Image (cartoon, rainbow, N blue to C red; front, side, top):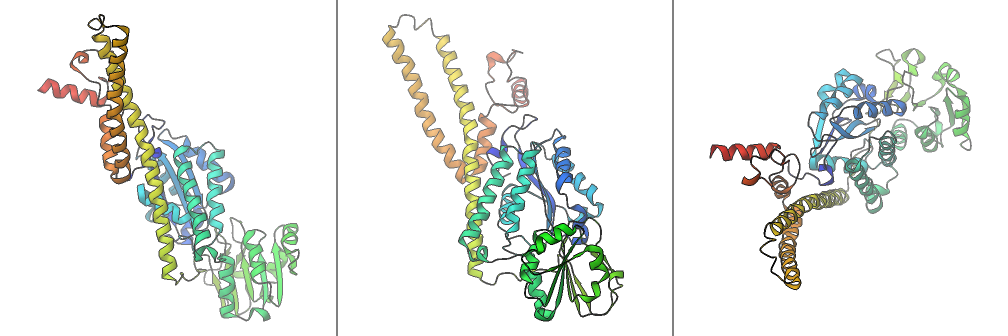
Length: 452
């Protein structure tokens, strides 16, 4: 696979080289009716990470689960590791299988960088995703699922997101699902004359209170009255219990629901009078389930319907794309260069071993040399190797930046390990103590020699 990353190819728990994989669903192709059953947060997320790490094929794992996506990132030496992640996602919602998307290599890196920058969000440029990505990394670290490969990748993605928000106009826009819902409401109703109910006590509920602060009447409700009173402080909003709010639902013109409830908060039976009435369900799983039983004029918008128009400034979009492309290239280049290190180390160790072996073999012939002559001989061999290796190191680092396939070839020929090519010589052909003979590559070479 072209573009494979250095640190992402270190020996894994099974002793082979590792790659990165991502499998999951997002709002681009998977509807909220499917995604809502796949949200894993809190203890459920930690348990899912532990389950993944119980699989010996998986070296590292991170789960990124938001209202727009549930994605599992893996580091593994075996493509079969994706099967475990697929099974976990399928268990969350069997109907999600047709929507699965698997990414790897450059495509995976580019995707994660775009996600962290907010470019793949439902509200392009929204800032919340940065915190969600950092939280996913923290949870993986907490469970011992985070290792050097995914840590390096996610650190780079977070840096890319910060740069986009700092250096582009998209990053300067105060984008949020709450602001978009507010704009949609203003397109339908005169908010200054409207009565607004916000159900919830989290970050989105707080933003909704700010965005709709100019409403004629503002009310906040929550299962916990104390939490509702807390976010209402300083907003001028009145407070109701959730039971009181649902009983008085018909008196509100705009209803916004943003809770973490796993079961519906509002149903069709709660709406008894015709509209106009706007209901924004900004929760995943959805908090409003109404079916076809709504009175006329009551319009319900779920999270997939609350979308901001794509930025129209093509120059700014081009700048965002160029920054992300540059960040992806820099990351892959750094990882490729780091990948050269083990190759050089393995080859140098082998050459030094051969050098010492040859010196030992001719030691009797050198016995007549003076101490100075012996020292000059040793120095000469060292300098010859150093000169050769200087050129080799330069060429390998250049290859890492320009043609990753050459690095794959170098690993094949030079790297020690299960697929080591050398040292396999005639002297050791029948020596069972030679560890390189009992390797797949060693056995193939021996078979070739036997046939010839």
